[in-house]
Length: 235
Ligand SMILES: Cc1cc2nc3c(=O)[nH]c(=O)nc-3n(C[C@H](O)[C@H](O)[C@H](O)COP(=O)(O)OP(=O)(O)OC[C@H]3O[C@@H](n4cnc5c(N)ncnc54)[C@H](O)[C@@H]3O)c2cc1C
Image (cartoon, rainbow, N blue to C red):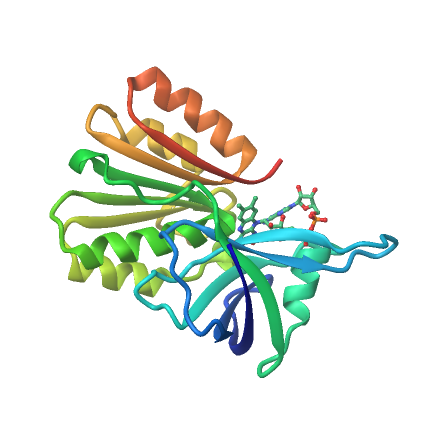
């Protein structure tokens, strides 16, 4: 694990509460990591003498080693997300990393099933881009759960990836869609229940809140045996 200093090279608001932050590495000037790993920031917390540590997954693929992309939602009053949302373009920051055991494995050519809720998409984006760059033919499927239309982002990118890679498909489901939504609706767990009949040839990656991870692990286990890798963002 290294300590990196970086400059905020780009900030983009993706929704009302989700922001993309690109960091250009200064020292060291590049990072080696496995797709799915995270970096950690030490941030001040009101009323506490010492900083607290908050991890954020790298959303960009490892092939892009001089810059990393983070995507996060603002948690009101939360020290980690408030610190990162407070950064401005051109400002410097530092973080430690890479770390984490939630990374893309080979798994003997099993088809890949990725499931995210909310910003749990971050490490999965890195894995999906890295996997598709390899040019293998195994199937790669993403199921992504968000709340409503105003929470949608990265949909054009996913459509472009599906168009470019016949082995990739993605479904975004909304748990509380406003009227007019013609896509999938309901929780991601229900979507998997309906669309995944057998897990025998799958390797599964789950990332997001603990409710989804716990529920899906139980449901997938009931369907059979397969490797399931999990990254829990919060309880
Ligand atoms: C390995 C790892 C990687 C992570 N990567 C990312 C990432 O790429 N993007 C990202 O947005 N978050 C990510 N998280 C969550 C992140 O580390 C922080 O927990 C989150 O930003 C909230 O931190 P905070 O200090 O602002 O608020 P806290 O004071 O820590 O949290 C306040 C409350 O908000 C809840 N909460 C935490 N995260 C969320 C969330 N995302 N949505 C809704 N409620 C939440 C917590 O349960 C807590 O009760 C990751 C967590 C882990 C463990």
